[in-house]
Length: 429
Image (cartoon, rainbow, N blue to C red; front, side, top):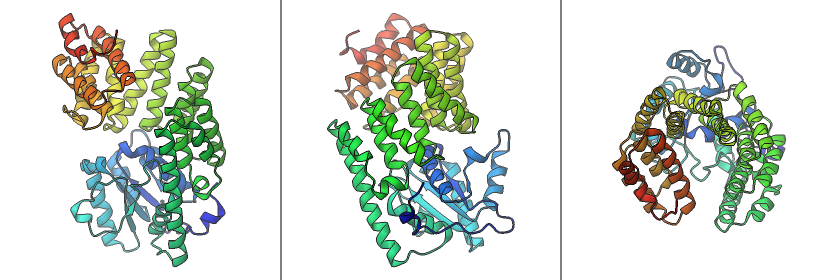
């Protein structure tokens, strides 16, 4: 529940008029969906009727027609802009639609928000935007206050500006403290921070989720679960704490916790939460069941949910890669052909060149090239990934182990295997 001392600075939604169904329409690219879900959770908690495609589109509906209809019935529109969105023709088209409606209808409030340092398109340079680039884990701080005012077209008074600035400073300080604790491997301080009762921690679940996700990275699963259970009590409508709760349970490796993780994810699925993050974690739990049992039907289920996520959005390279890899591991001629198709489509998203300072994305390119049986190119790309993080031996080992499994299923020759695995010669078999 959002604290009263924050709510007194947040304007209420405008009443819906004739022909209006939504207070606000969200436009975004699927790779930013986790952040957008956090925004959706907060706006719903504040009483706004929010159109977001994953929650409102009925399977089989004509996408463009439904989006146009929803926009036409919305009081305000938010465009979530990022480096990923800058490369999306779809988002650019939606920007144009939002700008056109704002020009024709003065009552329509159009608010662009930035998630990173990517510049807004030239035709948007003069528009006032809300900058969330300091909040990569979800909306919080004074920028959230400014956004809510922008949605209803209400300027901030002096007291609200002061409050917003104070919340920005407090929220960013808390986020930096979590990052600093991760850097020095200090999970106890993260737990101490999460017990803070200050306003930024009580306003939205984003800081709590950041703390829990950091503990998951540090393999402190019970501690992460404890934080997430408290968040779920405080923010019962929020999706992200439930996703992370399931992930932490699955990471513990016990059958009982894996079963509990699947219960959480299956319930989200039945509620219509079909975003790549939910489906990706769900698919991962089926892979965990396969690894425990070696029952191929669980591997098939894992592929099914990765493929569903990829087909629903089409631009999420993580789910595309996993749909391809699981298809290879299933191993039939039909599955291998399907893997090749998924790999080709995913390569169009990530390209065939290394990604500067990004080990996992470069390793993704390598794995896709491997699935395409471009063994020499895959070996060169794996070597590029290793150069990016030469000391990350754990990452190298898990990447190599996956490559070994795929090579066996693809029927690679010994010389082809050597071309690929030469990048990992520094790791003992």
